[in-house]
Length: 234
Image 1 (cartoon, rainbow, N blue to C red):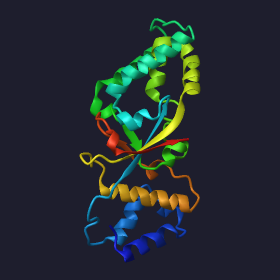
Image 2: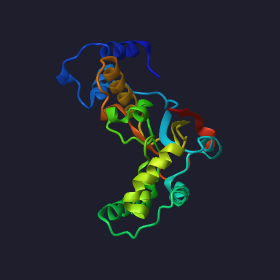
Image 3: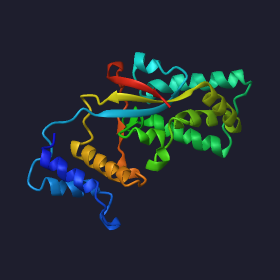
Image 4: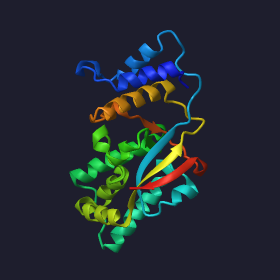
């Protein structure tokens, strides 16, 4: 993708100690502007691996069925939460408390527009799922938001007990998959500049931060099983 002199330039910059005020959110852009002053940036789109953080009772299902969008996952989530509640003899509560109403609103919002909220979502950086706090991300391997939302809507303050049992029964995983050929919404330029920003931060033992990662969405469409590279149990 890059010629050797350009690679050497980028490597030299990211391994150098630069003044703090030169490391901005568009640091990767700064490097590319110097490396490619008058040339087209990239010849072809690279193969991109994405990392989907989750919890699962049956991780191998991803190999069989792929990664389902929210519209297909939600019925499975509700059945799972209700089954756990039943086994724990926890009764459904009328939706009257503030926490129930808030989570009901969040659930309805997430189900309202598949292209925006339907996912499946994934991270460019593997570590954004293993150490999400360093990237300013939600920890999906600890507690997927939609699972908690539904539990609080149906079971109010008893949801904490259900979620603890859910965590006991499930394991944290990261599903690695190849970018679908029909989804190139994230530009190659953004991919590379983000990777450069990430490399600089890591090489210099700095916290990566929000701009060292990209969140991918497949806009409410399935990630098919043939694109699954592997399941990482963490």
